[in-house]
Image (spheres, one colour):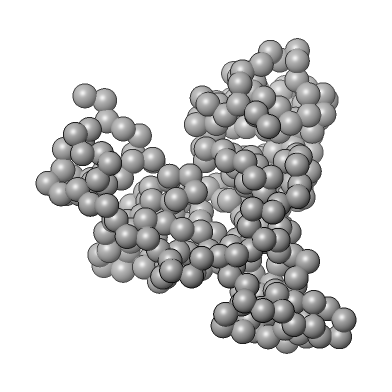
Length: 285
């Protein structure tokens, strides 16, 4: 029997999510309980081990389903893209308070009070979700105020569901010079597929998390000779966004940043490690 992809399906020898009953063997199946990320950015790990690398990251305000808690770790599934893994227990909180707004700039500060000269409490990434309950003004600057009195620059958030950027390539370009981070999915550090996913999220579209998932089912396949702005180019383990017919934007370990690069030159440079591109896809608007 072929087992479901462990990245998107929660099952272990002792426990599995209820929807997998009949597909996997486990002594116990559970529905899970909702929770919400309360850390600015937190790595989702394949095992409950602080020394383990990360598969992806979750952002402030995103929702997860918790299947198990043990020894300071939570075994969870992200609601946004279905990714499964382990988080430190202190990174999650109550899911009851539904976020109202989403951060729309690469990075912003959450201030302890609505005044830019005061200390900030956290740095939030684009894509973070916050619950706004009030507004304030200080020296001509407008702030959105959260339930606990902390504040964020009002122009740096928009109501969830009211995103007004249609071209995800514009969003990807906002991340130029952002540090490359394996598994990263934030304005603090990002990888190639994370750049695609987060950029699309900010235009109201969904995308799978990993490169192989995107290459298998994001949009529709196209021919290399038909490439245009917004198309995706895939190598084994890598993805880039076409900015125009000659230029790509991608997060690369070559420079350890998000860069703009000539497409043909990138193909030659990348070829020694990842061979030639193995797929081209056009996301569906």
